[in-house]
Image (tube, rainbow, N blue to C red; front, side):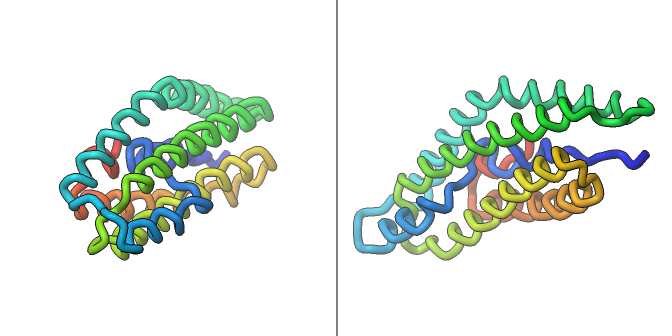
Length: 181
């Protein structure tokens, strides 16, 4: 039996609890570039990292739950029946909860007012984050629908994207946002 690849890392590795909400993306960038006061890069990074640290702490119970369900899933993989529907749903549901919390966190990060000079660079990071979170949700949906090959391919793509995005975040200067768990 082919081993499934849980996207545990996608749900919280990208920016240690920061994700994004497409609905708020343009408004934060517009505010940052419209002439309103914006933070310096150092101020933005410090405040964003504080928000990510707070989000990471709030997500911790869900992370532990996801790790528990992942261990259970790995055990089920070894059985003749494979992953149960209940485990598949629990993985997808827990991933969805983590993604929702992370989306709320990055909405708060964006509301800080990004540095005008860095809006293009940050928007690129935010788009990659959105894509990774979409991948995490797609992975969960594929598991629930017994599309294991699709789930595996989604996991592999998201893993590469997650690592690249974390590198971009660290290069920008984030210490917590962007940190691998």
